[in-house]
Length: 364
Ligand SMILES: [Fe+2]
Image (cartoon, rainbow, N blue to C red; front, side, top):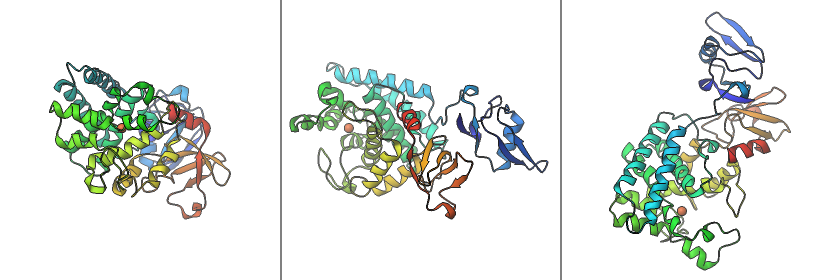
């Protein structure tokens, strides 16, 4: 059973729970029973009723993902382009070419179209994690999340493009670092960490030498490990000394790294990673960037299963953009709690995602 928003319902899907709504056109209450198949007319009525956010659907009757914010083909093309760009990066006789940059620039344009056209959709981490190949999928995830944050901050399209390209290039310098260090299970020695810290410099030197991107884009790549309080690397820059693109990418980078499965660490669930980012607001991260991030990334995506502090288990029905940690949920005993807007439920908090949801979110 999955919960789909009304926008994702299609005729032929089978209801996994009863649903009741008011059909204003004839002034009657309609109840559809578990097992009923949706028709075009039902879906139109649900949308026009204004009271239905979505419905529980039998998964076997649905090919639809819970939230599909980014087109799969765009992601697959992007990963292929990043692979060939990395091959050229490693080929000292060739290097990254203009055509490589054009291709990722086109990907950035497609991502901007996807993310600008769906302003109300929160990014669901499960939807962008689809590859085992960590460095490349991480670069793409950072580009997607950075663009989403940039859209939320109102950046113009030309800057969103540069930000997306910087996101895709940001860790390309890691392909020059020995894989044993990148994938090491234990703690890195000081020397090893010193080597890892050079990856933004490797990338920036390579790109600069070929004059392939704007100075701003280059600054984003070079400074993505700088921290708001000056504790980052490679230069220990502070606050606005750090380019805005890098401040945005820093948040996207840490969030994606925390929620990823790494050889040396288990992944954190999205809600914990979000709390970590919130904890770094104003110390590691730019406060305005974190605020935009919180409006775009769903800690509890629609359809996920959560545990409530009143002892009940519930399903997330609708995200609340103003209070991302307090969505609308329906408990297993049928109660509906709008945790963000209804003061009666102020004392109920979400304790966390349940195990199967975490598994699904993290591993897709
Ligand atoms: Fe990095």
